[in-house]
Length: 541
Image 1 (spheres, rainbow, N blue to C red):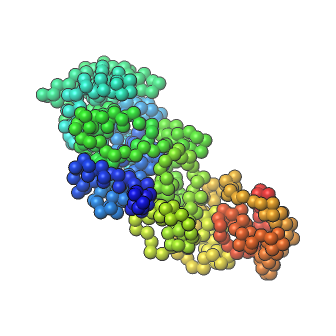
Image 2: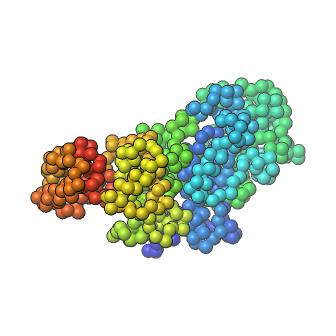
Image 3: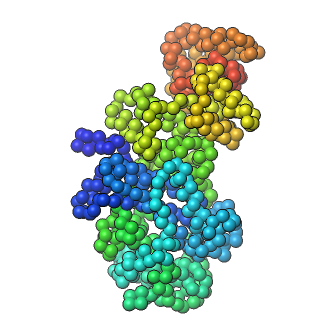
C-alpha cells in the first residue's frame, strides 16, 4: 500500500487502516497514548470463521499501530446480554422455552462446563483466538451492564429518545422507536427481553417503566406475560437496542476503530450518528467487509448450522493458514470451506519463500504487500529462518498409504527421506504431517479440487506418452533400478517433445501434489502406484 509514492508500514491494507486511523485521531485532537479497537463477539450461537475474522482483522490493526510506535489493544466485547432469538441448528429443543431470555441467564446446553449458554459460546471463540495467538482484553456485555459501565450513556440516550426516534425514522424509515424506548428491560416476571416494551424514562430515578407485551422475533410471535413494572438502568436488568448500543460502547470504552459486516450497515450508520450527535463522541473509524459465504454461496450462519469453526479448521490446518485466509485480503465476498485448507497451507509456504527470498516477485509493491501479510500472520515476529517445506497434498497422499497407528509419522518421514525432501525431523514438519494425516483420515484426497494448469498441445502429447511409459513399469515397482529408469524415461519424454525438463517436472508436480516442487519423481510415482498416477495424469489430458 503506497501513499504519496511511499510504502506505508508493511505495505498492506492493514497498514493503510492504521495510517488513516492515526491521521484521523490527530485531526480530531484526541489523545493517542492508548488506542483501543473493538471486535464484537456474538454469544447467541456457535462462533464461526466470520466471527473470528472480525477479531483477527481488528487485532491486525493493533499490530500495525504498534509497528507505527503507538500503544494499542483489542477489546473483545461479548454480547452475552443479548436475548436468544432462535435455536441454532443442532442444539437441544429445551432451548425453545428460553427464547428471548439473555443468553447469560440460560444454562449451558452442552452440560455444566460453563456458567451459561452465553459463556460457553464466548469461550469457544476466545479459545480460537488463543490458539492462533491473538491477544485481547475480554469484556462481557452482561458485566458491563451489571457494573454500570454503560449507565451514563444509557441515561443520555434515553433522555434523547424523542430525537432518536425521529432521527432513526429519517435515516432508515423505521418508526419503531417513535413508539418505544431504545432500551429493553428484562421483565421481572417472565425474565425475558424484547417482550418488555420500554414506555417512559424517569431520569431523576433512572428508571424505565414497561409493559410485557407480545412481540415479533423473526417470523414468530413471542407472547408477553402482561406484567407492568419498572427497571432501574443501574441494576443491569435491561440492555440498549442494537441501533444505539454500539455507540454507548464506543464512548464508554473509548473505541477508535471497529470493522463491521455489510449485514449490519444500517445499524452502524445510526450508531455513528448517535455517537457523534447524541453522545458527543466522534465515532470510530470503520472498515466494512463482505460476509463469508459457504461453498454453495450461502451466508455462514449460526442458526442455519453451516458454520465452519476455528476449531474445525485447526484440526487440519495451522494457525498461520487460518490467519492467512483472514489477512490476505479484506474486500469482496469470500467463499470459504474446509476444502480450502490444503491450498492455504501451501500458499503460506509460498509467502514464506517470498519473505526469505527463495521465491521471487518482480512487482515490488506486490512483494512488499505479500511479505507484510506474512509478517502479520506471524504477529510481526517471523522466524529468523524458513522451515522445511513439504507440500501439504503430498503429505496427505503419504498418510493415505499407511494405517492409523503410532508408526505412521515415522513411516512418512522415511518416505520423505527416500524422496530426498526431508532427512531430519523437526517439530514444524511433524505437526504438518499430523494435520495432513487428520485430513487424509477425514477428507481423503479431494481430487475434484485439481490445480489449474494451462497445457499446450506439446504438453498433452508428452503426458500421453508418459502414461504409456508408466504402464511398462507395472509389476516392476519393487525392482531396485525402477525409480532410476523411470526418472530417465521422463527426461527422455521431455526432450523428445521439446519441453524444458524443469517445465515438464513442474507440470508433473502440479498434477500429482498440487505444488511447483516435490519429491524425486521416480520413487514417488512408484510408491503412489502406476494406475493411480495414470488416472491423475489422464484427468488433465
